[in-house]
Image (cartoon, rainbow, N blue to C red):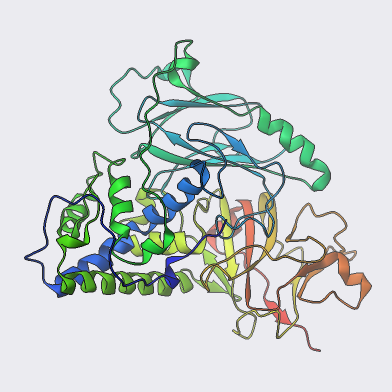
Length: 472
């Protein structure tokens, strides 16, 4: 499955016709249409990327199909270079990824007692806001039942039966479960834990028949349409899952109606003059450019690492639509910083772009600069093949995609110092092979994940080590 990023998709040709929106754009000037389209695209980018991820995961005909909505699916092995459905995936925690459809009734997620490892269920609405967490950090290691309620639900909520009740502002939810893997030999233990995760409708949880599920009338996905005015039909579909709208969004959505963005409406190019249609497409390109620029400068840089703090709840973003969109472009479905901190490196100590075809690199860790993680940390290698900014794990001859704090055989000296070697070819020094993280013969980036960051990582007193070129 190939995630096609809109940054390369400026299709400005004829529009295809679907059902018509109820409003015309006769009185809209090209200048106003362009600005509205730019703002609407930035606002809607998380909806689009979330639609693609949910569609691929939930629609049987898609190449990345996992399971229908309201059914848990599990990775039976950690992610590797073949996983290209989502950018910047981790390989530390096999995923239990699934979607909820709350239109018929609330859903219950039950977890067992998990004491010997870290785990988390990250709960994300259609805007990619992280609105709830279940796991080691937030709800503890004891078993529990958790209820998810969608907008507009009017039935009874038996709160006393649940460890927590979470209210979503969207009818569709993405839930990303992560269960720590402590090396390849530990995989059977992870699979056994996954079997204990249980999802069921509220009525079934209470011993009653399930309420009839509602069909999902998906808009057939063509990611090329994300790059022109046809993006509107996807946004309109998802907006119908967000009513009633959050008060923070109301004014913007009312303005966006001028270019045909309206819950449940389709898209018909006949409703636009050629001048306005061209202006909307230009506004979309403006929006894409703005998101890309923000994505490449999304965080404070320390020792060449972008100290990412760009993911969170609606209140976290404080109305910053561009930050929200750029966060999705860099790594959709990332955790809040308190859950997992994600420094990202695109450049070396000299400020030059990391490139395995030009240089060899090393990162030197000491007990003082080793990531301060309550649970564990990892360094993962990625190419940039998705859109020139983000990409996927790197295929390599030893099938090593990351080095983490549980990596077996990592060579350290008597004082606890160690180095990670980043290069395309295997090190000639055989003593370095255990600490080699293979790089592609092209530009790449690194993600340093800190699960359960300690206070020095949260307050900025800890700094990651620089990435130095190896003199040849």
